[in-house]
Length: 228
Image (cartoon, rainbow, N blue to C red; front, side, top):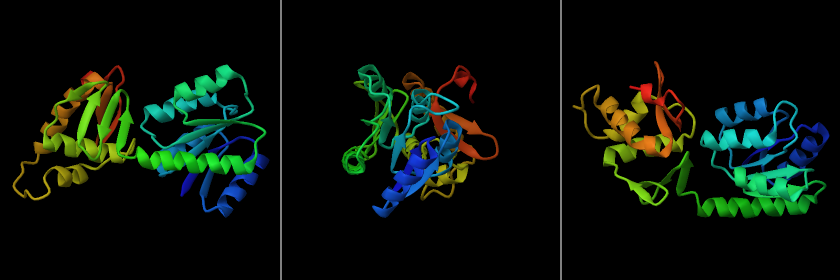
C-alpha cells in the first residue's frame, strides 16, 4: 500500500513514516508542495496525508491542483488548524477526511483504513473536472447528463483516465482502440481522439496532444479550443 505523506515538519514526518511503514505502508514523503506534485506525477499512490502549512504554498491550493489533475486517491488532511471553517474548506476542496494535530497514531491508522475501504468501494468511478466515468458500466456523465460515446471513444477515455495526468503513448491508445484490427489507417486514432475531445468540452476536460509522446487527459485551459 503506497502512501504519499506531505509534511514539512521533518521530525513528525519521520515518526509518522516509520510507524506507518511498520504497519505495511510504503511511505514517500514530501516537505514542500513542489515535491508533492513531482511525486504525484511520477508515482502511483493508494492514499495521501496532507499538511496545510507548507513552506512554499498553502495546502488547500495544492489539494485543489492535485484533484484538478486527476489524482483521485483518498486524501486525509493532517493539520494544526482546528477551526471549523478550515475543516469545512478542506473537505469542500477535495479532502476525504480531516484530523487535527496533535493526534493519536492509532486514530490516524484507523482513519486511513476507513479511507482505503471507502476508496475500494468507489474505485469504479473516475473523476476529472466535471466528468464522471464508470469503469464498469462504461458510461460518462456531467452531472445528471450522460455523454453519448462510441465504444472506441470509451476505450480511449478509459485508458487515459486510468493513467491520470500521465502521458499515454499513441501506440498504447491504438492497441486499446483497435486490438484486433491490423488494417486500421494510421490517422484513425487521431480522428477518434478529436471527436472525443469535442464531446468532453462540456465537462471542462480536454485531451492534450504531447508532440512526439502521445496524449494525456486534463482539465481544459483557455487554449483548449486550439487543440487539433
